Length: 414
Length: 148
Image (cartoon, rainbow over all chains, first blue to last red; front, side):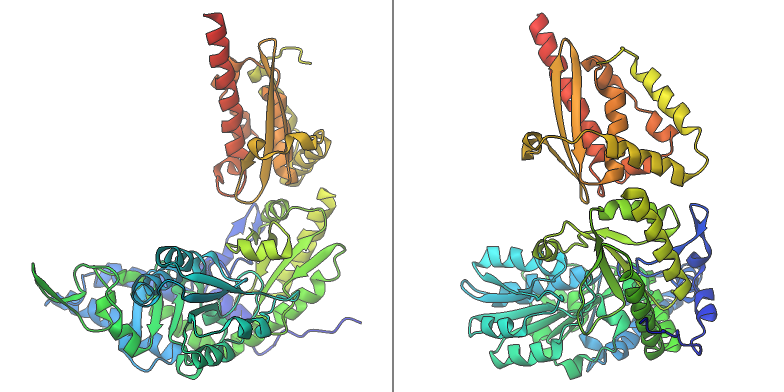
């Protein structure tokens, strides 16, 4: 018996879609169906307008200039910090460090806090479902310091094995760096519990929010995480901007990351004093335009309403799951109880790359491959998956197009 | 093995065959069919030294040199790549090292499959073309040394 899934009528999908110009284009003569949102989302007109407005009207270097344009640019740049602070409910605006993205955020913590605090024999816990960006920086640090990486295993459904996590925790655990939501599986991890248990042994916790920030309500104070990192481009914002949140005492105790302008108070050849937070970690001219436009993305997301978006996306997820499960030989990878709108799957005797090419040929953009999570693929003993990930603007009809495209592709390939 | 058509002649044949298709689906169906028909590579050849790595799919390539000509065998875990390999083998296998090294392989662009070569990260095809030419170069050098 197939459950009837109603896509919320009150959610004005037509109006939402009108905000995204890229959605009107065609690919290979077919209307674009964009299901690669976990890689990056399309941008609303408000974000594009903010970029154009910045470069057209008040492009200037920030913080140092005395002239009007510099003041306007600085105000707009700093306004994004305030909005980002509200977006994740950080205690203060000084705890919002702008980075180039999640990857830089994690590397910043590894190279500053990590190098200062991790010693030989210390243990860093990550999980089997991490993105390479939350594996490699810790691997490099562990190599340098003689520290040990410990990995939380996952079960068949793609959930963390929490009992195994607890067994890994000990007085040697200095850091737990964990993904909030898996990019390849969609699993929502119980980070609040993880943080609580890690804190009990005195470990610091970094939460990788690259995938979670766009779907879930983020409250870093409620989570009580020590660090939280996210990327603008996965929240309908421009590429090249991210946020690193950190607890104030930690950020204050950390050495600077990169040296340069903006991050100093006074420079003498024999003595340098560093700027206060957040500027200590923002050396050089930042990515002003994209940071300014990031605010438009956060405002837009707030205006549509994260609750509304989540309801819409969850309905799409249920519908797509139900439809995909009808396809012979198709297996969904990642069946966690708590998931966001990401579906990874494999089809018997069909290589994901072939599916990706044939779907693209019908205008359908999905992601194929290992999703930068090779250890996870190894765990399932598969070379990769095909992944469809949904955003606020996707529709039930687009899922129907995916299903039809899959049927056709599988027929061609078998 | 080969009735000694030149590389350009075989390329032209493929271009003409593809001109008969009116849709991309038909083109892909044909390529997939070629992939399915490509003889399976024996396991003995599927060793690491024959592996041409792509980010998403793997290609295995082996070459044999006989009477001044090179004969290729190849396989892939992805079907469309395998079909494209089949065409490359049809064009290059049985040719002389010099001709293979100099081959421009313009047919790939002419039949609209250039994107599969451009996506260097996502499949092993471009790496495979390079590897085919590397074999040819190696045999060419060997040939020259033997002639001296």
